[in-house]
Image 1: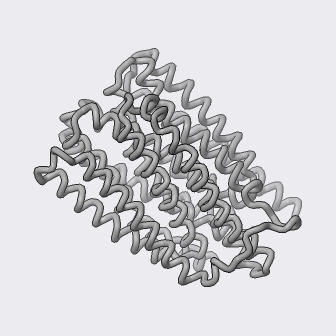
Image 2: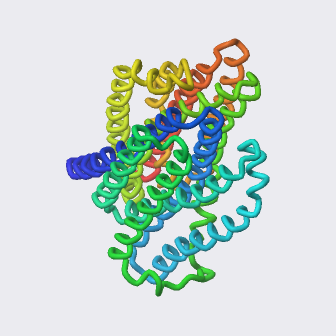
Image 3: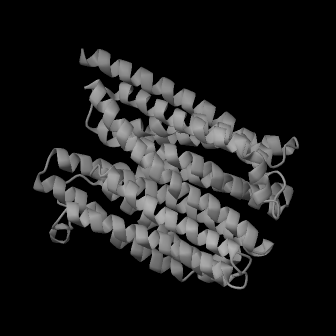
Length: 427
């Protein structure tokens, strides 16, 4: 059994690692291209737009996504009408609910433009459109993860990621300076929209009859929104909002909009490093959700894969540090050093991505929220102290290393104690 799990996890992780490397690379190239072709004011607004978008999508998209995976596992393990209704009614609830919220928030575009983009209405409208597309793009990928079709998901990510990268490079190396902002926005929207179409189309082939599924839950049905989505959203919102808040803190304490953009760009690189372990860790979720005896073994395998993949990326960043500095030279001076410091924080972060799956599979999202709140307090406090002591832009990187190391150690101890107690009680 151990060798079978190892093989399955490794192959699914390999597919996911390759495809999401392309996907995350495309967003790194997006930051490089915008730094090269946009004027400073537009670049700062675009960076804030993407940072805010990532905060929203990572909190809501992740919460909805893991709910879909968890409910899909329960449905496929027990194909009753009740589980079918619980599974598909949640998906329909998300689709309808998100559209209603999006339409309502759209009327606030003037307020959003004033708060985030110095009154630029275009960025507010682009932000709203790209956010809903990015949210559906993220959630649609979890449709395929829930049915363990990692191969199709990897193929789609490779395809649209490669096309997106080539399109961005065309913008950078051709004379499109007059309308480059609009071209880049259109390319980004196309990236999300194409991903949604491909994933939903494949999912519809795998799960026929979706439109005929009853929407309304019965009184005896399990409400996945209350059980998983809401606590997962709150838990991940603590993380996403705290990361986003660092950009605001740097800009406020140092009164330096350019440094805030530098932190935001550094966090794009960090999120790229963190996204791959997060996606690989999702491979673990369907297995530990249906497996009780081998949870710790599976978690250790996931940590090993995540640490190895992260070390490869850190080595690449170390070797290309001078090239990264050159790519952003028109906007920043210390970005490569900041990215390298942040990359070392991705090691404990990669392990935390795995331990986080344990809390999801065990339906202990309230405990996960407690740990994330602890992390947020340590992170914000450390960052503010380091800023006061003159560490400047690097304070964010050092704060990440300290806070994630504490988070991983505390979570790992908790899991070991919990699993040991459960094993003793079962015997």
